[in-house]
Length: 122
Image (cartoon, rainbow, N blue to C red):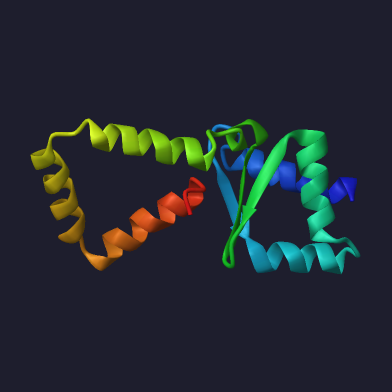
């Protein structure tokens, strides 16, 4: 397993890790691990424990990032802070933001939702 982990580390570094998040294809990663007789979930656990690298698995890709990024504020804290900011907003400003969201294209709304999910808001 160490050889496979080292290979993943090399790929990540080649693509700008740890300065950038790096994604690799989910299906391909599981296939390669399987062909080597490995359980990819155990490989991910090894990366996390030994190298402080975490990963978010989606249907298309696995996004690798340094573990300390996962120590983000809790969802409840973020929601509370957003509510506090909104309560301090001028009603006209709040209405303008709501109108701006309502006038966004479906693609832009989907992208905004995707980013919210990546941040763990949903």
